[in-house]
Image 1 (cartoon, rainbow over the protein chains, first blue to last red):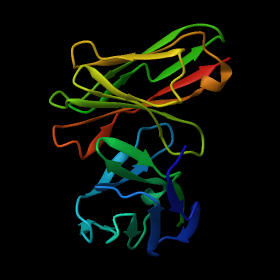
Image 2: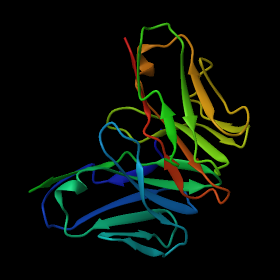
Image 3: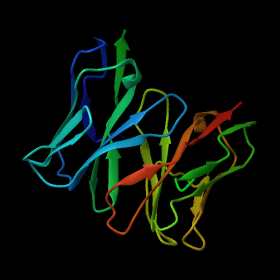
Image 4: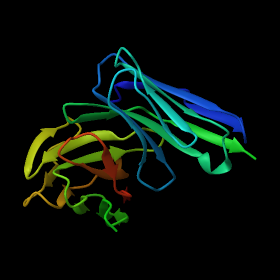
Length: 109
Length: 113
């Protein structure tokens, strides 16, 4: 089963709003990855984080690798309709990659 | 297209039949993962290969499931005597020598009727 706790489970926001979601674990990871998945498709990698405390941006997306190595968050600024989808965090240690249950994002125009 | 490729995209099978899925990873990637995903859940780890060696198998992988990567390139996942509970999206991912960023294929959606 899942070893990562991802929250919130779902979000309904207005276009233009900022979004924040996070992932926590009782285990330490060496890498945190954030993916977005559209219906019927495989997850697409958004951001990869490699060092504790690292803050990385990819366009309107910003993610941070928690200092304790047990958590990470993803922020999306100025949301647009195409941000709709399910966002997954994944923690990686020694080639073992585990996923959260996902955050379903709905953006209302 | 140099991404991860999975075939078929969709498979409908009768209960009790055997099915086989194929994954072609990104060509220079030596690590290959199989995951299963059911509706509303994140991907669940099934098995992992480094080159042709299968290094880890989840307890989710019952004896009806077998995966191979004979030449360290493409991989196959076979499910024997399928059950309705096997209905899911089967995802393949690959990563390079550093073993960090993993890239997924589009998945194979299996429906057992």
